[in-house]
Image (cartoon, rainbow, N blue to C red; front, top):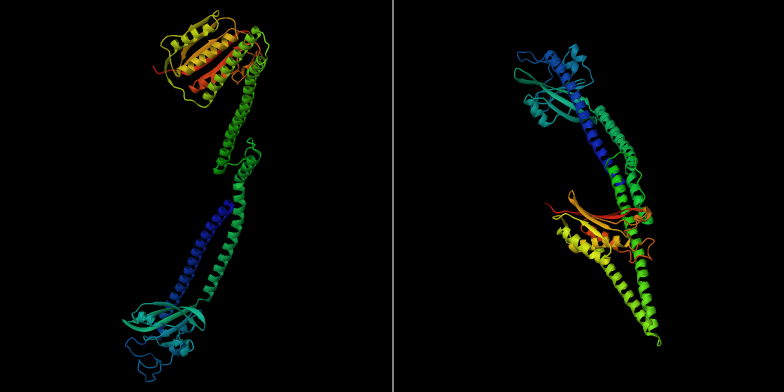
Length: 489
C-alpha cells in the first residue's frame, strides 16, 4: 500500500467520520425538534380540550351526573364499560363540535374506559398501557406511541381533576407518519450526500496527495537514476514552499552535493593511486634494470679489472638509490595509514638549529641563516617535524644557489616557520602540483630525487594538525611556510 493511498484513505476516513458524526447530530436534533413540536401542539390541543370538556361536559359541582349522562347498563365499575358517547351526545356545546380533527381526541373516564369519541364507537379507543393508566390515576400526564389502523401515533394523555378527584382523561393523538417520512427523507439525503461527498473527497485527496508527494516521487526517481548511472551531479527540481517536503528535497540535494564531493575525492584518490603505482613501477624499474644489466656484464669471463670496478660502483649507487626510494615509500605509506603522531610540547629553536646544522653538511659551501627566538614552543612530533624541516631545507638547497633563510615566529595561537630560498622560483602552472607524488617538473634529469619529499612533508604536517604551503615568484625564489599549533603560555 503506497503512502499516497494511505494518506488519501486516512483523510477520507476522517472526513467520513466527521460527516457521520455531523449527520447523526443533525438527524437527532431534527428528530427531537419535530417530536417536541408535536408534543407542544398536542399539549396545546389538550389544554383547549380540557377547557371545553370542563365547560360543556363536566358534571354539576354538587356531584350530580350530567344532563345527558352515559346510559347505565347496570354493570358495576368492575364489569364491562358503558357504551361510549359521541361528541354530540357528550356535549352540545358548539366549541366542542368545532374542535379541529387534525388531532384525534378521545375522552376517558377515571378507569380508562372510553367515554366520548367523534362517533361514539368502542373501536375508536386509543391505546393506553396499564403503566400509563396508573400514572394518569396518580394525576400525572402520560406520553406514549402506538399503532391505530396500522398507523403510528403519538398519544398524549392528561388527567382532568376537579376538587381533588379524577373526572376525565383527555387523550390527544397525532399521526407520526409525516414526521417519520421527513426523518427518513433526511436520513436518505444525509447518507447519499455524505457518500457522494466522501467519494468526491477521495478523488480530490488522491489528486492533491499526488501533487504533494510528487517531489518525493522525483527524489525516488533521482536516487534510482543516480544508482544506475552513478551521476551525483543530478538534483531534485523542487520549487514549492519550504515545508516538510521542501526540507526533504533540500536535504536530499545537500546530501547529493556531499556525495558528489566525496565521490570526486574518491575518484581523485583512485586516479592518484593508479598514477602512484605507475610512477613507483617506473622509479623501481630504472635501478633494477641497471642492476640486471650490470649483473649480466659481470657474468662475462673476460672483463678488465677497472671495468669490473666501475660496474660494481654502479651497482652500489643503484642499490643505495633503491634503498632510498623504498624508505621514502615506506615513510609515505605509514603516513597515509594514519600512523599516530605525538603532540607534545617541543622547543622549536633547538630543533631548527639541529636541522640547519645537518642541512649544512649536505652542502658546506651554502649559508643557512636561522632566526628563531628561544622559548618558542609548539605541539607536535619531534621526529616528524625534523623530517619536514629537513625536506624543506633539502628542497631549497637543490633548487637554489644562494643563501637560505629560516625564520620562526608566533602568530596568534600558531607558530609560523618559513624556509626561504632565492632561486629561480616556480611558475604558477606548476605550483599547484608541487605536492603531487612523483611530480618533479622539468628538472628530472638535473636534480636527484623521486618527487616524494614535499608529499611526505605535507602528510606529516597534516598529521600534526598543521598546514604547509609554498609561495613562489619566478626569478625571486620560493618559500615553504609551515603553521603549527603553539603551546599555551
